[in-house]
Image 1 (spheres, each protein chain N blue to C red):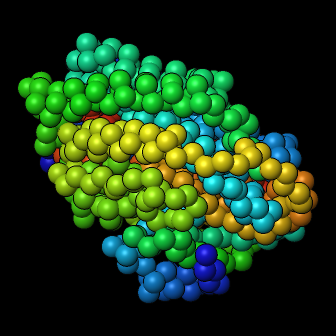
Image 2 (cartoon, rainbow over the protein chains, first blue to last red; image 1 turned 135 degrees about the vertical axis):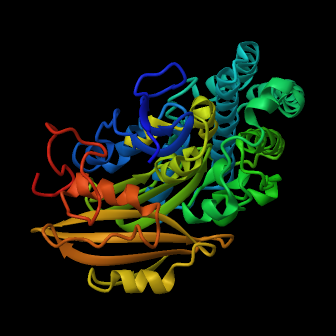
Length: 361
Length: 114
């Protein structure tokens, strides 16, 4: 029997943005087994939603699950609550919500790409991408009032309108960003150090993507064509130019490329939204109290975000179930580590774009 | 959403006959405390490439009855199963405690009797 050693990674590690601990079983430099501890930042959000807050406040509570994708959390909950109340938002509200979700996707993907570049030792590229990301952060702040953790969506609408000046800002910043993303695509595809570190590394096969129920960019990079935007009818994505981005090699390079191409697609959709913004109220009065059970799925930057909300006609809900993309993706991630080199583990981990704040909730 | 009732004793047979990995995406396991020691357990699936098609299997149980594990059929169900062990104090075959909670945490916080 060959001798194996256990090497931990985390919970605090230079390559991690949030606390997660992996325990790798290694044979020389090769990982042959892995165990993960993901619960370091558990805050009891589901409990708080059904004990401490009324249903009208829960949208603001769930926005605190995650700083990066706060908008998708509040949107998923709000949609579920609105369905229970029998309310359907007008087109202007739908477009404004979609705009914020797509802007959120752009900045989240850019953060992930910056982090993967940093893990390849490419500090200059990390700084460049973080600088480019400011273009989106500026737009988000101008529209919602906050750079992250925005309380933009509420039951019955959104809290701020999009003025013509803001539309101009969106157009201007996204035009600059699209040129910068073209440069990034060239770099990620052709740069020798990035290719060495990413191509053929951390492969999730299509078969394993199905077996382990991979989702989001992780699944699409392996050729599994699944995206909640194409599998739900809550928002008119197809009418705004949505295209599903699928790669086939399943390695870090493919995951980066899915994100880069999704940024390009999201920029196009955001431009279409501001150019074709329907007229209408941004907030409508919604009466009643939620009764029944609803499921809502939203494509967050990391994949499918799932909410199940059950109410009994009272102000306090019976159940708010939150299932986040990273939580579902962990079995697939652990499978990818097996057979990889320990030295590649930080880069592989960064390519999953894990969000522990979401996972532990 | 289609809701299908099952029981814990027939769960593996029912899900085994239904679930095809290339057709259905397993979403999660969920628990809802119904009060008076009763709990509703849910296993939720969505169909790849089809709009708004969600199937939810549910079974009524109590806190003491062991819940069968789906890991042999659906390896990724391990996360959801560990979660209901922590949050509702249930017993699921092969699922360890401690996904979220520490030893000194409030036990099974999502139970109605806490």
